[in-house]
Length: 202
Image (cartoon, rainbow, N blue to C red; front, side):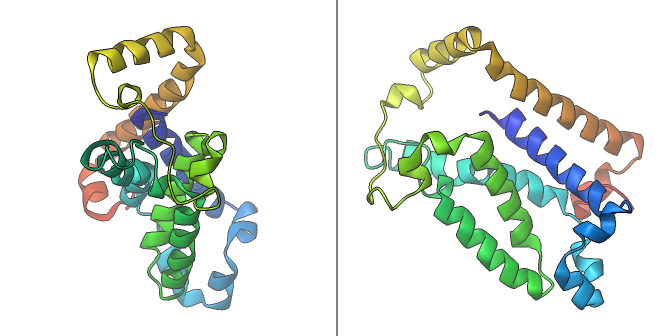
């Protein structure tokens, strides 16, 4: 999966969940137990920082591609390593839940983006990475031409898109969601507010 799909679909998923949280009768069902038990958290957890959603959507690639695909390519030879594992997602969720109880929901928001990233990358097709370290401490090594930028890589990606037109669908969906998101911010003059607070509404 490529950036447009990751960013757009993750953003759209967060937006749908945010909508559900704030529109009865689903609002009551979606409200976390912690919020009902401690109303003081409501002002913290009902605001989604969409900047963190966008960062979380790309965080596994931000971590893994430079490490496994560039800096330590001879060691790992794979742009999907630690941050593409289920263990990484579980750890970020668990620590995120702990911080959430301290009225600091930022890591939980990031972990949401990371989890969606793994789903969009269909990591279940790479169980050795997804379930690391159950299959051993090493990751599968790939041919550098499969992931490092080169003319061969460009030709391979072009051929992939042409022979697998379904690959266009997530990218188009992601691009449409991102376009609608930016249009909404511009139309409501909320771009500056978003940059400063991560909020869509005032």
